[in-house]
Image (tube, rainbow, N blue to C red; front, top):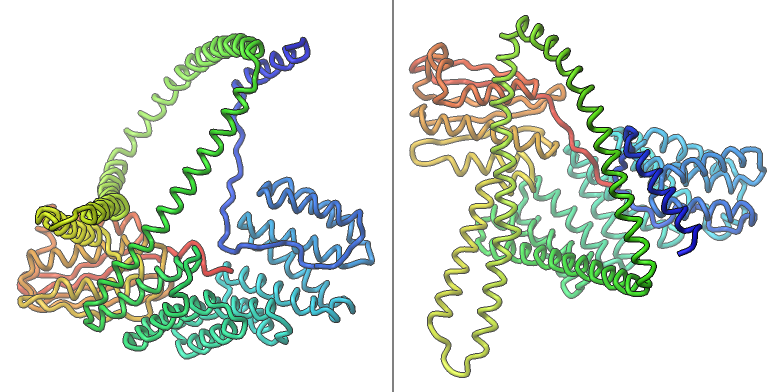
Length: 598
């Protein structure tokens, strides 16, 4: 190793030591959008070579997800092209800027550049585009992205406006038809949320027709699945079953990863429709859905293991190519640098500790004064938070246990069963009865584990939302002594954690009715009003004295009240001895994080 290499290593050590003492700057975190773009280059035509070279450089940085540097260079290029008479360049960069802002969740800025690119495109006189259908393709692509961006911002009317413009474009080729199909899928979601089911069915059928025309079996199966979900929401379970079976037959022999995932969804939805029809073959389809999902996970695990193994082999070969002399010198400098860093770290933390001790003494004095002035308020808030943390802990723990049972334990039992099946084939004569008994025990254990995981966290709630989950809960809790009815109106899907909290609050109230009310009838009413979930639970039981029960923990009222308080909601209880109980709760809605994107 020459002197130059030594100098470089020494410089790196000094800089690393210096950076250790500096404060760590805040870093930006980007969330990957559901909208996946195959290319950001809208115009597929030849442009001037200088521009094209710079654009390709920026686009390569964008593909590597280095969005900050890509954004800086793209903004600079966009400014330099503003005075250029060739508007094709400006349109290409505007689309790239919109894509970058979309990827970084800055949807308002993305809309700005989508609009600018659309204005340039609609005002331009691009004869070559019109001749080769590029104008229709690029208009279709921009209309779709504008609609998706508005939909992501919950601006449904604006989203529908651009989807309609896309719908009115001439279907000059399969590319335009594919964009239309994607727009129809998004419109299905909008109309289904607004309970305009006939319109949603119309667009589902349009999407199916396009996929038939373009011979896209997977796309046709996905659109068919959307159509079945509409019938499921309308409680037309027989029609939903028929539609799901058609979707499955379309891709029955297609074993691509995308097709397998779609089949898993179709089988799961088919199982739910058949369960509502009292057709117990539903559980076979549900089991098949689980097996498909388990297979997908196994393939992903194997792919990850192969990738890690390949990287390890590459690194091992590189290490073997290093000479022994260089290794010794690097080791010497490495240990020296580490020692130097440890000394600097100790000095830094010693000074930091002394300063921290002085600041701590001052803060303790100030804190003591504040605590003495506000002790009652702190006690009240602490109790509420402790109760809420306890409930939160139970919810997260139950969800974690359920996932572990289903994803790990269930998979291990399935693997054991497969090994036993392989073992049976090795017997030349009669298979020992102990093998069959063992398989039966494993099957029973698998069923009990699956039932237990669904008991811990309602799979109906996670898949279909509060409407179906509460109806299912009322059905399970009803018996010969207590009849529970539901009246649930105009509910949609909300943030998953919010749905779980609402479900658990109602479940706790029903538990109290079962244990203490001696009621014969109970009613759950729920609706959405002014961006709030409002529900009322009433029974004709013995009731209770609120003044007495508020001093006890027996019915869990304190825990429920703490949860509602933390959620900034309202709880009202109207009850007296022998006159039944009526409970009213209002909770601000926590919306879903994302919508259906293309």
